[in-house]
Length: 219
Image (cartoon, rainbow, N blue to C red):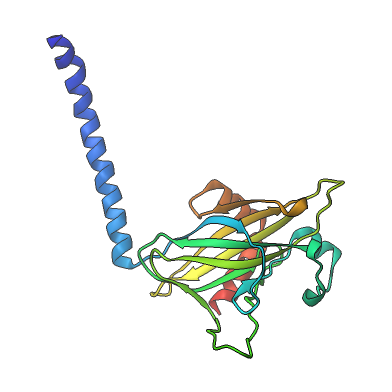
């Protein structure tokens, strides 16, 4: 037993302890650096169904691939209930700084998905020109997903968004939001950070539109 401890356990601990200390130190340094630089970090926590759209609050209207192919001119005020799904995009700033000038773009076209909000003639209200999020803040963003799907053919429509934002020092960050709209008001959703392989794959597919978006955002 004594030989086992001397020959096996002690050498193993001698290897594991420095590795653990090194990993802890590196992780601590990264967190400290992020705090010092006040870096925001947005994630899509979840997408949840929305029963009714409050048009007097900020909302987005991204359009899916199938709908874009079938409609060259979109009349938003004439959309039927079967043409869209109402959801909340729940964004969470898990970083250490303010995310400012948050904007959304359609990766399929490279065009901005402008936030909309109706003016209420009978109430005082805050009108949003840009979105900002403090550290640790969670924001629910109303979204009307415009789609073309078929129950018989079991087709889905693809909504691809780039969420792009700044920190207070003017540095730019982004994440990709992917939603597959299915028939009967169902959907699948994914979100990809720049460190993931899926993000890099999507970025490669939509590289031309990605460059267009970054250019327009910085202007």
